[in-house]
Image (cartoon, rainbow over all chains, first blue to last red):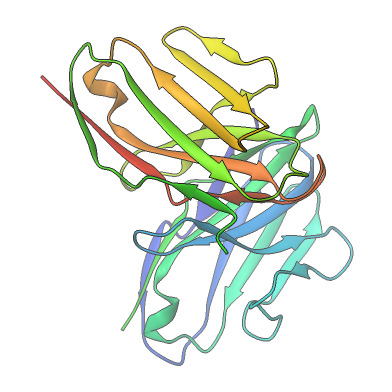
Length: 115
Length: 111
């Protein structure tokens, strides 16, 4: 399976600031996704990061709040903008392997706390 | 209406016990189903896919019941290391849709 890394692994941020999370994969992948997992909740898909075009956002998530970049087939960033305490969560990058497009693998996650 | 529902548990079982989890889904068009395992403060890791004919991997057996719209995970001879949260997931409509996750069922295996 693909090896996925995320930076930072955790951060504590002040209200009103922004944080950019990086996701790096060790091989080219077709699909990259960004999820959020709030305490005691299931994983919620934020958006699909499309290479060379705008991300596709799920209901309840907008580009102004969660801008996403995907400059190539191995890298993506998610920015959490103008943060509030409600944004405290774990943010996870996920990929679909080119060799097995029916399977998603997750990065280690970024644990964000907003004060 | 929740698309994927799981009993949150916790399921507290002794070592060696057999334990089963169910996950019900509302979208009858779903074609692909999965069980993920998530350890505390870690990312979800794929445990197994669930095929129409069932799927067995060692002590783990996954089954799909389309008529009643649920999938199940059976763990035999539980080990302490099986303690984790088990998440079910399925494609949202057909085989190309996004993954929809349940909230997870927490399993604690005691000595």
